[in-house]
Image 1 (tube, rainbow, N blue to C red):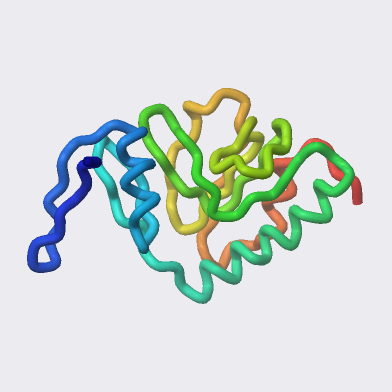
Image 2: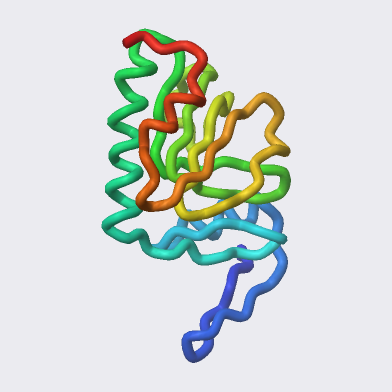
Length: 147
């Protein structure tokens, strides 16, 4: 049986697990979790402002990548070293695999209201935005645009 955090009076007592154990455990959870430092970490619920900024980012990027191999994927799981994270938006440049649950070749990552270091992903462009920022900044991540 897969190990996972145990809830006791609203407090979480966690135990260390592997990435593969986490992925199996996470698939059975009603809420979204990330895997940081060998432990599941609950992902905070989104706000209106954050959700609208993510929607704006997707709306800007989709036409910009149309006609290229790039695909825009909001809230898509990515393995980062020995972690599992869910950035706000990811641009994937690898082969399209309809059943994939992780990108085949991450090209760009946009995080919203989470200032995290993605520099360990070679060749991946990344940007952190905060609610209230101008979403057009995401176009700086794309060297090729079709519009």
